[in-house]
Length: 197
Image (cartoon, rainbow, N blue to C red):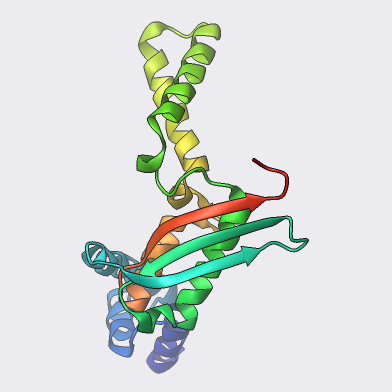
């Protein structure tokens, strides 16, 4: 594969600019897969620098699952209305809403989980560890490990993304921030299911 072909392939697979692709390929000794990793790492750094910027524009995405028994309303924010109208941003909103419908998260992040829920889960895990006869000194470690697992399964940003389980929802958003060039933030969501209180 010529350098030009490699750059074209890299651009097609990542959406990165021509010069960024060229530098990444140079850094990866012409290996396209390694160059993708280089671009992803740089994209994460770029995304982190945008994370503090205000995201006051955006869209409300409505996803209704086939059969009309399950639906999600999601507010996904960005910095400008120009990006809010961008097809890629709208697709991201749709994909996240679909993910919420499939996984039923309890909050956006672990910081949003109520103290009441954390205390309740901690009590259950502590009782389970005690009943299994674990020594007192390792019960706390077991409880913390199970709580961490609970957050990863139930908090939206930490869940494996339904369309690519190799990435978390947060990683998908971080990649979109790097690609689109604006801060993107999940503001809120509501999941509706017929018959649920």
